[in-house]
Image (cartoon, rainbow, N blue to C red; front, side):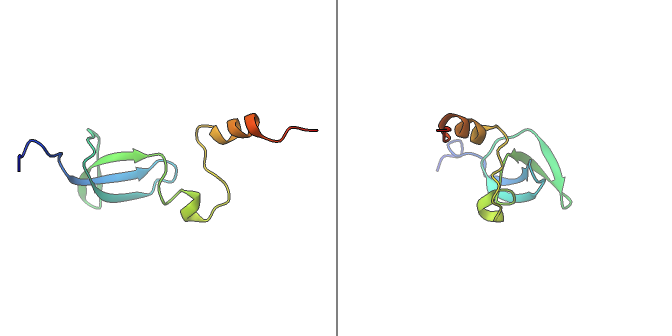
Length: 82
């Protein structure tokens, strides 16, 4: 196998920006930012949502919408008064 043809696979620290939850997962993401977690320095990627904040996994009825898409959809396609 060619060494140059494959991306660098390494452990990356993912940080949920809405809850602050951190977890490590193997990935080929390229990032310049690093952070120390449990005494080890990892490349870090800040995710807008993860299983720690997604309503499907948390059981929450309220949808986390940081960009206002739900309100925009309701305004456009919501029921109009008769």
